Amino acid sequence: MARIKRVLTWVILVCMPLSLPASAAAQAVLRVGVLQFGTVSWEIEAMQKARLLEREGVRIEVVPLAVNDAANIAFQGNAVDVIVNDWIWVSRQRSEGRAYAFVPYSLAVGGVMVRPDAALRSFADLRGRRLGIAGGALGKSWLLLRAYARKTVGEDAATFVRPDFAAPPLLNQLALGGEVPAVLNYWHYNARLQAAGLHEMLSMQDILAGLGVRSELPMVGWVFREEWAKANPAAIDGFLRA
Image 1 (cartoon, one colour):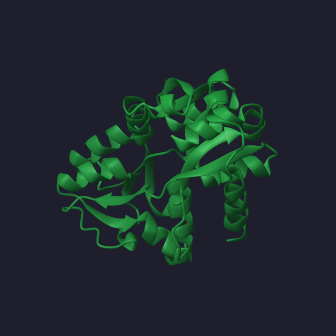
Image 2: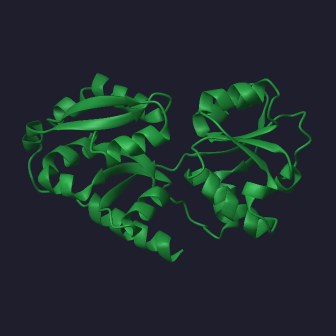
């Protein structure tokens, strides 16, 4: 909880409005790393169609990326200026001396969806079963689920279940085809599974509550380098307003 408080403290600081006029943002092109299967691509498209970026005087270059790891590598390699990631990843980077800033983007993340024929009624029933996981071994949802497992069943989820990491679209195919009985996927992919007859056994809100987090906690947000933001304050401020 102490780490969460520290993270939210600097979230508030980076969210403070900047003083330069929006017209100055036109001096920089903001490179946004966007996952091709993520909801960020929808939002960027909506911003462009509504001409919100143009209103703020912000020019962006959308850099399409295949997976979360590619986004992280592109960001750390200075190939993009902004990505969306979770506060856990940002907190870990900051603890290693990297001056990354985080501005909350969304409360919606996902949860564990199960097949109706899988005979899974609670998390404890997943012992020894395959669990498809989106986001990779260092993804926020998986790390939180591992902590949740330690607290609720007394064992790390990494050994409690049989984890299978894959891209969100593939996980849905595996679940719908009956190759995995349950998946830990993002909310917009879970919505498709729910429409196909699967049900949510464990939401991220359930996981956080099980870890003692009682209030709503922004899980993902816009991430950018503090140094870049200081050099281009109007660009990042205009982008966040849009």
